[in-house]
Image 1: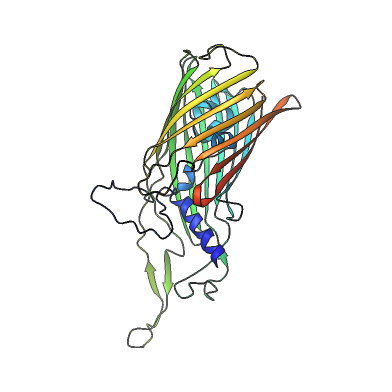
Image 2 (image 1 turned 90 degrees about the vertical axis):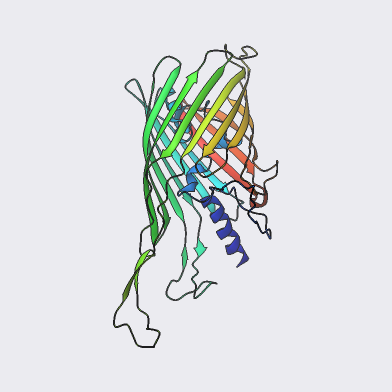
Length: 369
């Protein structure tokens, strides 16, 4: 029983973006000075989960630097550098090995005309959870037996092209679906992004606004059903009664990312000069979603001979009353590029501490030039 309670609690954390989870046993009483919290007011919050081992290891501070298929999940303007068909697959295990909560993603990019086009798919799942009802709060209700799982899926199509030799922009559409077996919601949205290489001391700036779209409500047999029940005086109704739950319309978690990247060591424009062996890149990002407070993130990546990488990052969760410590949101990882049949296979790993929710681990595979 305790295992299922922990699983259900961590699944709820992922759905509500996790920023307002109070410490166990703590009662939160609103005060006059408190800001209005927007946590849990939007749907499909799994879209705010970091995708990819490289991005996770850098604390999500990647909106200015990611290129190729990985950029599909952060700033699609970065796919404009694609010179051939490239792909990435990422698998994330959230909140400890026993939670059963996973986030899987894949993306494919290819040049098209004067730019590049990309297709990305993401699927979040809570794992199996015992089905409970008001009649059977511990499960095993004969009318609703077995288990269920929450699943969220998103499919995105993006196009990017260079506006000038330093400025790139992108636009795209996405279809999102979430829910359980008898209650689902479907959303449609679009994204806009841009990236500018300044040419000054290795600096780049970028911004992306994602998940812009109309609202929609949950539907399904769990929302609309027919029940048969006796009247209060004991006489039967003579037939079933239609019941319609008044569900609230919700929107996608629209978010805005902005970041500045600096090549400290490495290429010819680097702040501290060129180096053919060692490279160091730093980035500072800010993420502001319609259902969160502003979340800064900072990341550093060290590269050796452009084939071996070490990464360190930190993401701050700023939601009021949240029990996060400074150590929560710290991440690290590494990667290696391996030549395979004239292409490069990149293997990346990341580990993030998440306080009482244990940790997130991510493994990604990228194939490209």
